[in-house]
Structures are given as structure tokens and as C-alpha cells.
Amino acid sequence: MNVLAIDPGNEYSAWCRYDGTRPVEFAKDTNEELVFQLGFIQPDSLHLAIEYMEPRGMPTSAQEMDTQFWAGRLVQAAGADWTPIKRREVKIHLCGSMKAKDANIRQSLIDKFGGDDAAIGGKKCPRCKGKGWFGAGRPTCTECGGRKWLHPPGPLYGIAKDVWSALAIAVTWYEKHNQHRIVTGGGGNDDDDRTNERSADQRTN
Image (cartoon, rainbow, N blue to C red; front, side, top):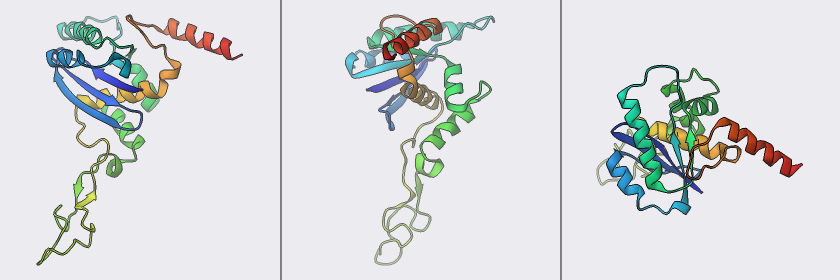
């Protein structure tokens, strides 16, 4: 099953549809546009994973309140089974540390997909400048063999800024979803997750 991951914001939200092997499509849209688009999806065709803010014992800004409001609107619009993903889950799963920063998460994703050249690529042949030929009469470039690329665009080519976060949410859910409760119509918590894991263990014993 595909997962649609969303990194919500107070005005714009980044999203990524992931099939378990690569991002299928991704973008960053206004919240209004994304709510509209979600109205056309088939709820049974994918699972929704969305970043969910946790209480921190600190004052909350108006932007954070607006972000939570839109997160709820997006879940409602999708009408699909969904899982709230906390930022700390992403950090621990991809980097093994709560101290991980955005750059660490991005690099972890790149490494998971084979490193910069394979994951991102998009580097044109330096000899033919991406034409596939070089010289009088347009003979096939001997350096790239006419392929035009030194490193062709990889599965993460074009991903930027907040979309990296959406991809991180998607990968985290996809690789852990057998251990997490799939939520229908409401939020979950760690106690529920532990209860379900114990129930699964009892069924297998």
C-alpha cells in the first residue's frame, strides 16, 4: 500500500506519496489546494501519515496553532486510515538520535537510496554538456555513450526543503507500520501502541 505523508504548515504543506521503493510524486501546496486535492483520492488506495506536534511544556505560537488546525483539516479531507508521526520518531528511526537535525535526516535518506550520485544525480555529462554528442558531425559522446548524463536523475531528484520532511515521514511510517497502530478516525498514543503490540505477541504465542 502506498503512503501519503504530509508535513503540515500554517499556510503551506509539503507532501509525498511513497510506494515503498521510491517517491511516486511530491510537492508543496497551499493548505487550501491540498484539502481540495485530497477530496479526490480513493481512501482505500493509500494510508495517510502526518506529522503531529507534541506538548512541550512551553508557550505555543499562533503559527503552531494554525498548523495543528490545518493538520486536522487535511486528515478530515483525506478520509483515509491515518497515523500521527511525531518528529522524534523520525529522528530516532532514521538517525538513531534525538539530536538529529534536518541536514542529518536529509543525508540519512540520501544514503538509504544509494548516496548522492544514485539518489539525486541529475549531473549532465561534462564533455557533451548533456547533448549526447560531441564534435563535428555530432558523433556519439564517448564519455557518456550518448546517454547525456554523468549521473542520471535518481529517485530523490527534485526534492527540496520541506518535501524532505514529508519523505522522511513516509519512509519512517513505511518501515515501521507493522509496529504501529493504524488509526481510523482518531489519534493514537504510545499506550495504545504498546497494548496492540502485546496483543499481537499473544496471538503469535
